[in-house]
Image 1 (cartoon, rainbow, N blue to C red):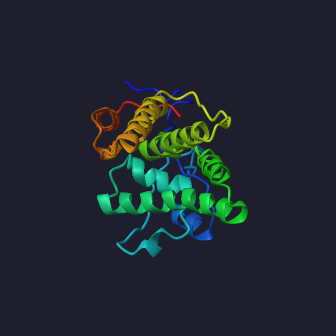
Image 2: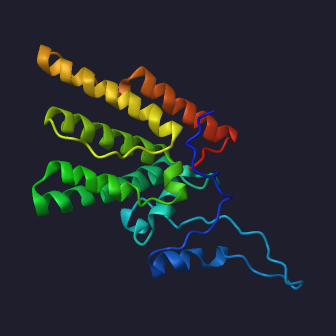
Length: 213
């Protein structure tokens, strides 16, 4: 079983939303006391999503991550694809905000990594977060090496992240050699090791193993 070694996944809970819209959506799911004063079990939250991306307005990063994790089976592939888009957009926004300000590609990559590191517990459970962070850090380190400069240490204690980072490091080296030799660049999305890691993650999520974040 893969272990990302932060803390155990918590039971599904209501995350504090960043907007009034998200708060209203979650209001009915907050724990309530019965006549004896005991808190009743928290009900799973189902966000009111449609094919219209605007239905995702007001959702926090943890809300979007809960859609990707889909612990209660509420969401379809389109919902998860839209959640992925909005999570990735925040990382890209951080990159371009820094790049447009400084014109420094490495600084923009660092801004992307810092943006990812603001993730909450649920987001760090997702394959997307671990893969995106591994990809960006690997590219950042490879770029620093090419330019003969020292890269900052963005390592974290996460087995899933390290497995993916090893794949991205290897793909970066294979891409460098492919460029030198005039060959086609490898596609990490089709890489055997990458697919095996993703399949293991998906199996464990389906069979009830909890990744640690």
